[in-house]
Image (cartoon, rainbow, N blue to C red; front, side):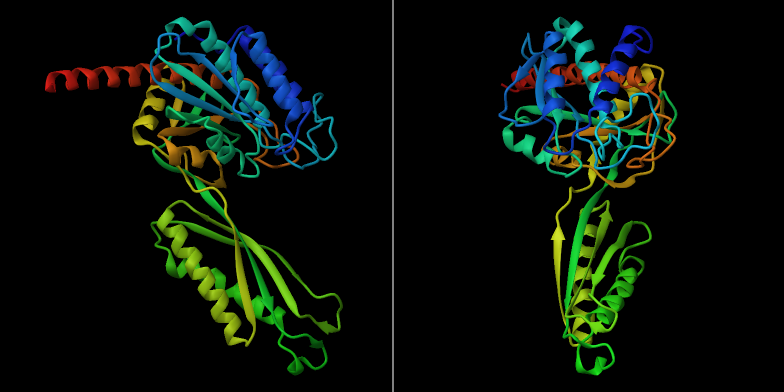
Length: 396
């Protein structure tokens, strides 16, 4: 594999990333972003495949000699955050910003497509590029899967930038690497009254307060110390005046887990606690769930291959701690095997911060890594297919 850490590819990808950074678009609104990606791919002679998407792009390189199909994914949407970086190429759109580095992801995977196009004749199969919309809403991956974009794909690869890792370092691990991210809304219904005579009503605020306190015991008393889960209540609303006990209190929050069994157990216990406490206060309560993505669970064999590929390129491989953030890449891994990695970007702030930025020196690192991984994956799958064919012939 050639060294792509220097030369024109780095400047080219930096220019692309900065254009995307200046023109952020929110989930399901990525029309100009889509048009720009199509233009860059078309200019490079890379074929676009029509899957009927309103936003987002599917493209392919290879397949000239048949062979397996793999996919590489980049998310393309931005966040509703006012940028505070002071960069010369800061967002030109008020209240919108690439505060999660999806501009970096898109530019890096475009670089991968450019590099693989140069080596198309050598590819032992097809690399399908998924420039996915609406990751921040956890809707884009499902949309692409329903469109058929993952049909025939035998392995899928993706990444997230990691500000706390240095340039040239790649975080790779087998098993869970990002959390299942569910939201919940709890409505507590009581009976309103004058605040001076609370005995005439059924106070939903007191009930909600006791429920919120009780929820904090779920993880400590129902989840093994060898597992992990997080329950956070993030918003509470009740009442309209200082001297009125309201009819209703509403609060919501999030549940984060890495194991599906733990996820279901905690959800069940949360509902039981809500209903039990509400009943004890002679009020009623209802839990509504906001279904988030499941945990991102990497395949062992593809995590191993990714580590071998990274080390062969001279990059440092570390086993990262799983992130409690959610990622809809998880839905792809429910359909086929693959691996999701953390790419070191040496940034000053974490994801979703208004001053989020990253070191663009990571762009050629990411592009070279995914180029090599795609080549290695196609070779691996082709060899496995050949061995399988030979074994079948011997049996016959």
